[in-house]
Length: 111
Image (cartoon, rainbow, N blue to C red; front, side, top):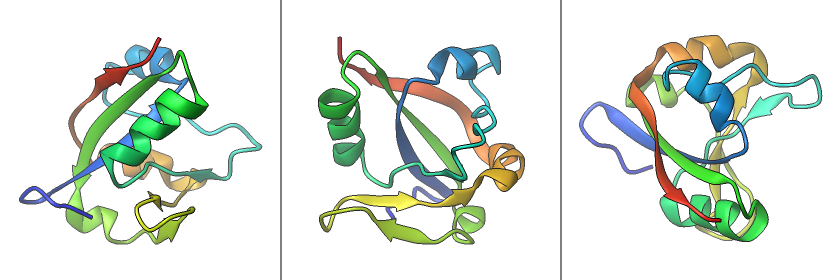
């Protein structure tokens, strides 16, 4: 994971951005019962592929989290070498959100 000082950049191809907007761009909403894992991805290229190729008409959002805190979660390879995700148990999402640095921002949109 590329780290910027004490921050780790993460990405999400998201249909959840209206909910994120309602949370003042500072947190991700709770997971649904069928979503036991929150999995932001570790590189922008993979996030673009998710947003552009799989979730067309949805946005891609980038955010940074405290790198030391992020280190507690396992990195999972979800396909090729660069298809990496950070796996955060849904029940820990509130604590994860508390470690987001700044605001979540939309970095790409595909319509």
